Length: 425
Image 1: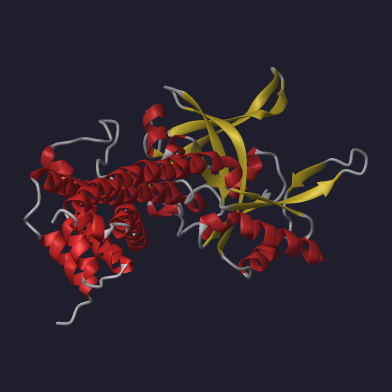
Image 2: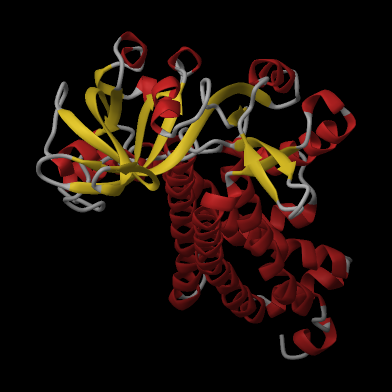
């Protein structure tokens, strides 16, 4: 098969056994270093992607991507505040027509205390309409009971498994909801609004909301809050991608200004409440990229050491090739080819091992008896999300580092003067 002479000689040099043991060691070390770096980078990035995906699913599956509330201005104070929706069914239909919006559900919310005979806990009370919540993450993670039970009987409540454990309660037990910010006058003086509820469902999402959020029917939540009608004061939007929230909020703000029928609306995204957490995860992910990329870079630049010594060793042969008419660019291509062979094998094997390790990491950890997450987690499996794009980017980046590492020794080889080298031959 025909091959360019530079490629042919470069491949022969890379397969040559006639070299010192030290050069062979450095060459082997650089290839193995790239292999380990690429393998580690693919595995760690896959785990970080998995953790980010779990956070997105478990937290942003419950936290509204965008919250819509109505704004009115007091004539005297000119201060804006949120008020209840009277026409929320119409507004809901309008919002469902907007781009990226997949679901719109009405709700009301308030801070509350939940009390059992054994304990007291602060929670976020949400009043919902179960008919609109049948396909949400809470409905899909019910351990006992169902969301529909909120409509079947009055003053029912659904709580998380973690909260039920803290309160030492179970299905059909009575608990008391107390609203410290709402008070009423009684013969004994002003006391917080409170009401007994029966637990009709327990959910387990596997995030911090399991012990901090409770659900009641919107109608009974409105009665507890002393509101007229269904008491709905907010709409939550679930999007096709939670990270489109800011874009959607900006678009809806513009639409609400143009359409008088919508009224003055306030759009609040999940970034305001959970943005710091995801920013921290994203920063940690980038730092892992940086640190492991440096490992690949160090391994790739070991190619420099190996090639420099090869250039010194091959001075005579380089001089002979130049006297036979091989150009300086041809000499450069020879040593780039030789260095890239080492990088190619390291990247190829590293990518294969990285993909295999990422796909079988949980099985390997179980086989070795390692418990990375600690005893506080019921599920010990690491979330793994292997993305083809990440593998391609890592492989191409490692190859680019290997290529850059070959440039200096290759150009040094091209500067060889045949007359000087061959004088003593």
